[in-house]
Length: 401
Ligand code: NI
Image (cartoon, rainbow, N blue to C red; front, side):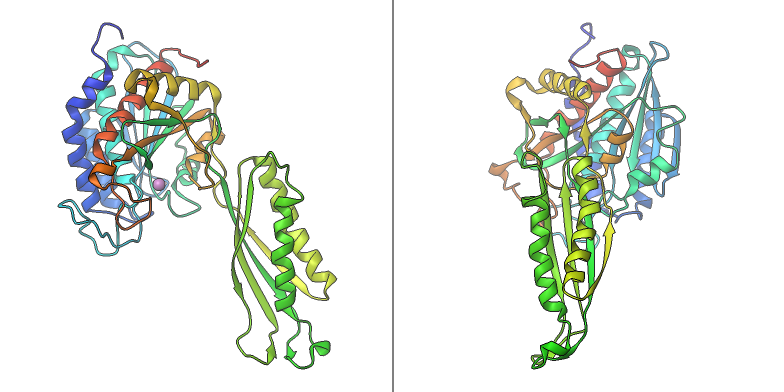
């Protein structure tokens, strides 16, 4: 690798084409599992690049392709991008704004798709430099659980050829363009949902002794749920329980028959997650029973949490330092958001890193899922160069710190 120019200059050269692709995708957003035109666009680009074994319709609208290194057989590293947009009306006044009413790439998945196409182009040019295989994967439906990642895995995306390691990235509206963020261990939260239905006994509000009041029981349950975090979870472990909806009754003088609660549970470790899944229903049912009612709990598992493998993180960090300089490589803060790259990271050692795309001077400051969200496209250079560099390093035998 020392004999060739740095990857960063390859990426600088192709940036205008990547920006054009990103803007095309931005103008034509498609929602989760409806990414038909996006998938066609991706497959066409991969064909133009000469990528091999292009497969479409994987796990819905997913696309995969292979780049074989010319140094001979070796490991397989999977590079993943997500392709879906959101049901949001864009408020940006830019010439590449969404042309589809009520749909918008407001999370940057347009940039992810364009960047992975750019990374593929760089890796095709540098096939002489590595052994083994790069598997490119463009997935549908990151935004809507159960999501496109699990669908593609079930459809065999991690086999044929067998994938040894996985890499993914997300643009970050809270990180200045130029920076890259990595972190060992948890990279996103397990995000699960619950629905509680309390069956009381309705009656006249003036005669509570003849009723079983589900409203009072619901209130007790809301408070009791907070003890799952404050009294049952190791203070060194993070968890959130939020009750986000209380639905019961409508009259001033009627005790309703039933009450419903809805909410979300976020956890960073699989152990805490499993415990919440067991303890939340038990606590709810116990409180309800103690007060003479019955409660039914529906516990809906969402995405698990990302686990960033220390060796893969070390490879990505080293690549990022070579690309952007040590002063621009930061440790990601932990958040409680969800991300279905988690499924890949639970199956294979992986690293999911963040790429800064904020630019205050240009007013690119709005958060993900906001109608004015946008991406500082210069920031994509670091993402592509780091991804390509890390893939080559892994395939050439780097095994992390
Ligand atoms: Ni996203």
